[in-house]
Image (cartoon, rainbow, N blue to C red):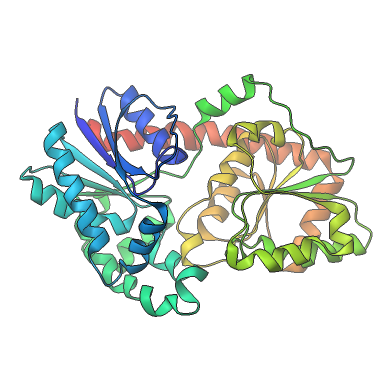
Length: 395
């Protein structure tokens, strides 16, 4: 079996997608080596693998990322460390995460003198994503970051890779349409699913949480931001509550700094304050416990190229917890919900209201969608997706 080097530009320990892929590779007999950052924390890594950390202040890393569109400091830092790391561990392949790591990984391989393949794991449609981030598109930063340049860089960075991993079939089709020179057989689909083995272990922990509602509860788990749709959903929720509909909303996740004032203003309105519980952060270990206490999972993402590229982790988490999903028609998540028959799609306030009332008022409907979701998660997505992922290296 192979010695596979995984390159990830964070401190790795809370990146559940990367950790799950490493576990799959190890169970298939491969040795895995990780190259990531050390931001000076006391790390207690759950995965038993070879980890090399690059010591760097988090603020300096953020500055280098800010400059990386037009300056090569960040790329040089990574390519130099990748080259040394390949030679030290005599690696057989590189598995780099995210589009912007492609150039540095390719240069690192070349500098090392090794002739080894590069797999590029795309966590999102990065050009679309960076053009939606407020930190990159607002104020003075937009002149430094120049996010639109990433549309021109995209094909060059994709072409460095021998194999690509994408989050959905719709994203794969989109890449093949826009870049006909890419080969379909070299693009693998691996959805952004949670590690179901870990979830099972979390359930066995029997963790308790301080949350209870007498009315049906809507649940949103993840980053709170305008681009995620949850903030724009709050006025709709306020309107429905004022009409007399009885339900609660539980939101768990950090707030984007740029959207914090608007979010805090909304959740402190008189109507919403009584019917919303906001928790800034909760360890994913507690998620199965929360899923046992809620009735409807929200996926209100803005419909755009970034969100069309893949299904957010939270949808699979809702499916695991047998929770019906109420979502916007982003391509990948609409395809998942429709094919699995595990929720309802809305395009506007009128449809949101209709579907929400249907789910609140019918436990039978909720139970049916929830059961369909869990069955589909295990049969169609988990087993097949994991096997397809391993084909990249087992071949």
